[in-house]
Image 1: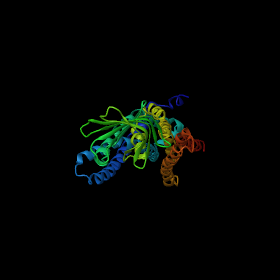
Image 2: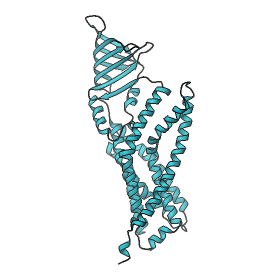
Image 3: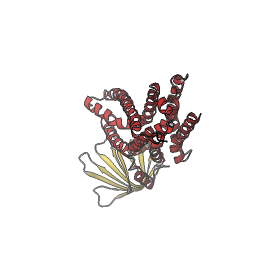
Length: 371
């Protein structure tokens, strides 16, 4: 009884957790470095087409994108870091000695599970907001220096604000709409302000509706006001534009550029303005499921890595673990796509990968412990 009272020791927990954290950090940094090099090659290729993009700016853009990349590779790092840690401890016979001393698999697995859950919670609450902020700056630099896109779009509770450049003319146009019919891409309660290149107001247009079609805004019941005392009323009026529906969606609907804490309010704002926020809802629930997914990755890693070194098929089992990691990624992407297209409910598309992996890991670990 005296021996069993010391079964859960802080020293052992710290030792296992520290081993895992060190392996995870080294693997994570190595993956980030490799991905950064590939991103730099792609950014340099794109920047080579512009004469005024310095190399320092390209390096800055690559660094701004790293936190977002880190969130993508985090489940893989958690999985492979745990697999290497358990394989290392097993190869040194440390886990075998611990098991022989009467420790349950759940007891020495507990510290690693706690670390993974904590990392998942920190990623959602701290790393994601920081990554969203830096990715927003990256996209801003990309639009200015690489894409040369001068159009800007923002959505608030008061409606949609859109700034577009004038085709073959100096100046720009600011469009405000109270609501949007996204199905037909029609703006309601439209106000258009046309400015000259030196920011002078040249014209104001008020219309009941503006429909996006054939590279122009087709306005109905438009009242044009310039310097004349009375506005000119037209049944139809065309305002040229180089925007497409996809441009409008991409300009504000990138889930990765929005902080976890801002997503609920932004979803409500988009829906109030008439936009479909399903993609953002799927992304929000996917973030909520991250801690559970990380715990599931630990369970799967343990089930394929904690085999005696003399046991045949260890390499096959580790390969299976790697395959499980990639299968999880593709399953998650597939289910999220179904959720965005409304083929399955949002909750099911976002939480299913984490729940499936968690239940699979629990089943395999129970079989490993009792079998």
